[in-house]
Image (cartoon, rainbow, N blue to C red):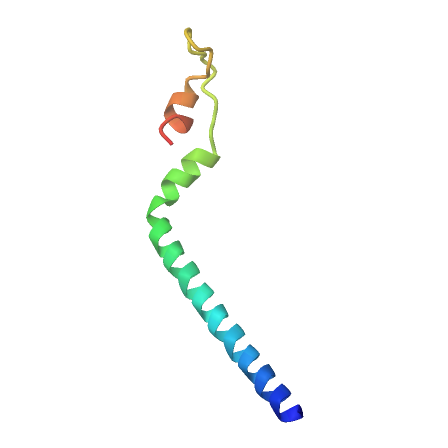
Length: 70
């Protein structure tokens, strides 16, 4: 009985290790793919209002520069 338990624990550790390595690899590839868009992320999350409202819809003009293109 204990021999089967040791095999089960060993299999579980191996499975967890493989899953962790696979997740880290996918995270690395996602980071590389999205790193070229870092400037776009910065512009979107650091929006500054222009202080001028659109006469038709009432949005700040910065809405059309930063939020609407996404």
